Figure 1 (spheres, helix red, strand yellow):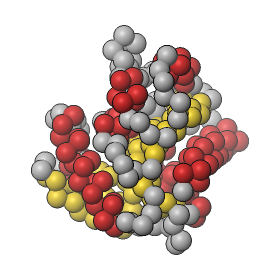
Figure 2 (spheres, rainbow, N blue to C red):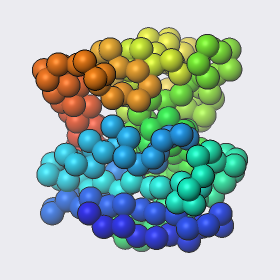
Figure 3 (spheres, helix red, strand yellow):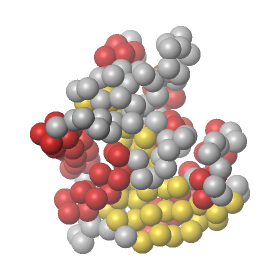
Figure 4 (cartoon, one colour):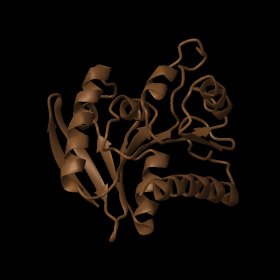
Amino acid sequence: MSIATLETPDGPAEMVVDEAEEPAAVLLLGHGAGGDIDGWDLLLLAERLPALGVTVARFRQPYKVAGRKIYSSKPGLDRAWTVALAAASRRWPELPLITGGHSAGARTACRGFAAPQAGLVLLSFPLHPPGQPAKSRLEELVAAAAPTLIVQGEKDTFGTAAEVTTALAATERAEVRLVALPGAGHSMAPTATAGADAIAERERLLIWSVTGFISALS
């Protein structure tokens, strides 16, 4: 693992890289608004994907590096993400770059998607605030014209897998694959009472979904 400091208009950010020995692709991931790059799903991918030929770069936003809990604005997230995209493109110019993230990181990746990025991996896409389904963020998802993988918990209070499926059905986004995580909430993390088999199955499903999607792109 290596850590690179990136200078952004909003202060220093960090890119934490877990490198594959012979990478076929790079996955750049952003964290959620209240979380960090050590969230269950981001950490699992960083630990497991390099052995499967995918370099994982996790981007820590400037507000987290500065010790703040909440970001100041969406434009601030987008400015920093633009710096991360440029850094990844310079570091791995010959490899397919897949972008994405968890929750707010997924939204930021949607807003920042552009060629030559190869696709999007969206983890716990926050379709709406909890209990407020009318305040949909579907437009951000639909606007990103990219091959897209969404991994969504069946019990996600920001939009269940079923809700996201229904919302997407009313759009023309044909290049979207959705994988539902049984029993998972917004963090995707197994509960403290989850058995070893259930934890292993959730891990397997997440890793299989992401690696299969990336393999089809690269």
